[in-house]
Length: 592
Image 1 (tube, rainbow, N blue to C red):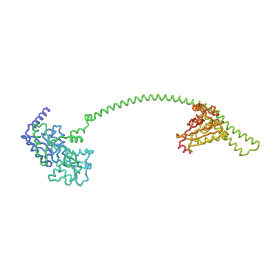
Image 2 (tube, one colour; image 1 turned 90 degrees about the vertical axis):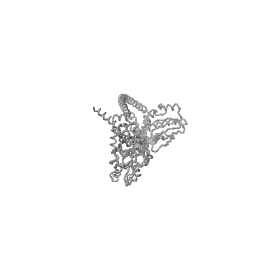
Image 3 (cartoon, rainbow, N blue to C red; image 1 turned 60 degrees about the vertical axis):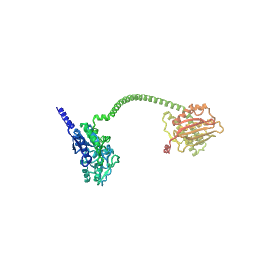
Image 4 (cartoon, rainbow, N blue to C red; image 1 turned 45 degrees about the vertical axis):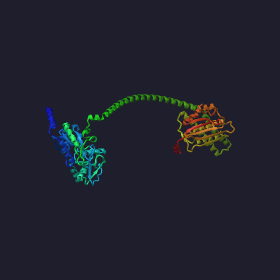
């Protein structure tokens, strides 16, 4: 029943509109005396003639809200409105058939905008300086009065809806806004573009005492403007108006003679700027952008949501797969660690066995060496004791001789004690920590001992050093003395049959931080096979004469992180080099 009543009412309303002898023209600012009076009256007269014998009824609405309500209700057969009002109601079936232009605004697509003015004595010179200020406008939805200013603020990167501290509205009459600015009620006002120029043609200087700001350059209008320009007034017709009447109105508007200001009707072809304005401000047909619905979210971000969903499931799959792989790898690692511990224990056992065997071998091989080495200090002790006994029998013993004999005997006893302790340390594997020493001093000590024993009689021995005074090595002094003394003893035996026996000892250092102690003599050379045997660590049993095997010598040097090198001189004689790492310069300095 309700539906039938509604359809009946709608049919009656439609029939009244189509077949009525009266057509109503709705408008707001357009016919007001303060805007475009000449063209407004001429347009009304033209439309009256075009629809004759029908009558034209003019209805001036006082606000944009009223025109919106009428257009939404579809009661308006024809209307003259701004471009934004037209775009808002395209969905209601309203269509533009003409757009207004003039000599000041010749481009129908770029004609209207807003001019922002302040008092002439104001220190405000740009739109951005109005942030937090008070603005006077015509209407909350006014196109030229406010909306285009919002678009300009948005284009400059400002939050247009929070830019002004307060906006006061004074209706469609611009003179009310000018008066409010002059009274100081607001800091700035907006005027329609070209309003000041049209009033100036009438002899009215509306900008007297005022100052336009944010002036933009434009080629479409011959007016001052603070914003971009948009299409001008549009003449709209309802879809319920008969086609012949629409054609008659359109033809009449296009044929209308311009006013003295060049105001006339033509066709606008580009409303994209208005559409972009609505989209930027999220108003009119784009007001849905302010509402987050599931449909809009899917429409705008569907691809992103789908991609995130896929990534989420990939992440979940990767997470569980990674956990599984970590569990498997952890089990494998634990098993490997268990095996590694077993191998480490076995390796430690082998190393312990090797160390024990090595120490036993070293003690066994050193026994003959130390038996000989001990014979020297012990023989010296016996010699001095016999000398004392003989002098005592002859009553020729003096106090100085006793002291000298005791000192010499004590020194040799200490030497013998050190040799015994060294053998014990090898056997117990508890050798003392290394000490820092000068390799030249160690060699000097060895040479002095050999001189005292008479082994260097008739031998020309030269000791040279090219290393730094602060170059030191770290090691066990007695062990190095043994290695150096036995290399020298071996060299002495090699040059025994030489007419002029010579031994040259040099101490140097290389670029890699090693101390090189080189021994060479003028004895008979060795064969290449003998040299290869030396390099292959074949024990020296017959050439050393002291029973010190090469294995022992190399073992001692290797304990000092060094090595023994063998080579042949140009004459074919053997050159032995003991290479031991030097202490760093910082360590030497600290030691000094």
